[in-house]
Image (cartoon, rainbow, N blue to C red; front, side, top):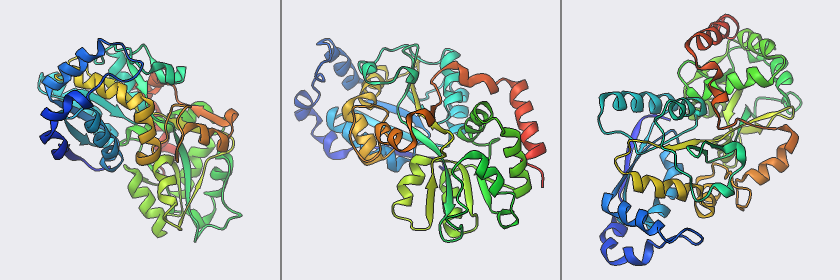
Length: 366
């Protein structure tokens, strides 16, 4: 993802806001009657600022539907990579200037650092009953998606018999001469989600050191974005990619005959984009509406069918859902990364430096 700022105004809805708000902005079914106060206060705020590490293209269906529910609230959507989301929020918060109302990022560890450091508002969403327990932390930070870490390969250039089905098979494969300079993964120094995936691998994979050494043997090529990796695998510049964000890869593979996607059979890490409300949010009530909307059955249905980011709610039907993914991978092989401070294990300066040092000495050797 590249830095871009998209201000979606939903012009037609905004023009009609005065006439339609009373009809459109109803209290959702099952919510307490006093939720109307939150809706009315959000209408007065009239704006919502979101910092996100989710492509604008994937977010736009959600924003459009949110505007249909709550016309008159302008959504300013800022799309950045996961490290930029964190750094910009920290910088602006420290300066006391305007910043995000909502933080939504795939770098679960960076989000949890902010939440556990006191930047997040404790807000019990009306939709918590629809979420798995591991996706909720302290009624403050919430998982919103169910996205696998995948192995992606070029179907034209990698023989079907070569395609690895486990992490150990992948490590063995890429030591072959054919894959030298042809393997890609995230730059874990620049990509927050890449660092998180790799540290979770270190927890889950008993032969992690062998995997790192295999990357070194292959002279792995690192990138800071999923899109760049998919482009280079599709073109054949790279033959195979590791820990690629599966939500993007699986959707692209449906229209790109060059791409094949493997969800490892020994274990598949599951990422959930973590969202929280800034405790110092300027548009606090609008942020509450967005939080509840994104976790609702309606919002999750948009995530599954339009945004295609894999809905986390088990009661949602559609093209990309957690229920369908679990059936493909197997319940015992699904390893969700919990929305919990446990993901902060490698973020302390000493442990982060030690992890990166080992990575450079093994995977980073040329």
